[in-house]
Image (cartoon, rainbow, N blue to C red; front, top):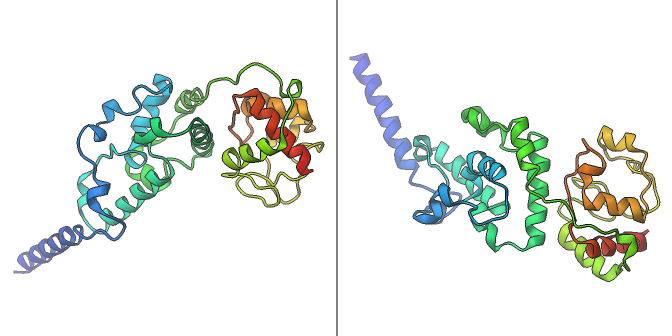
Length: 261
């Protein structure tokens, strides 16, 4: 009798969980669960300039939350797990939707490439709660090496050989840099007012990487150009992954930072 009662209770709980899973407190389920060719991982990022090894990492380990090609596991249909999964997918797509990569501006792609490298290197992506269930999603050193090839090397040329425009530089700063930086407040990166002419990693109150602290760099037109061209090539092991490919845009950013001093 007790076993039958327990079975009935378990059955009732499962039925209730399945029924609650039909509720979608975090969004429209029809918008979340995409079907058709757009949901096919085999076509994800095809035609992009992302190298094949990096594309494989993004598809295998990021696409569940950061694309329309989400794999909906069996527990994604059982509340409350379904609610948490839908929330993660909605937020993930808002920050980065690989299915829309081709529609992004080159500047937006550059910014997202930098964020991908920074967050995977720090172990912030994929999130811990996802990795606890999906062990295969853990990003390895080889994966990070593959992802580092997303951004192609900057074009040749030094910004100090070009005439920078601070007005254009402000526009570029607002488009390219404000996701991590501000002039007067620390964010993911340090505040940047007055950085021109100062020694690297000396803003009080911000935690810099050991590599940048040891670099001994003073931020001049030459060193800022090298830094913006490829941060990791200039100071391997630093916490910033960022590249500005266009020499004129680097010159404009440096003019803006110099003016802001």
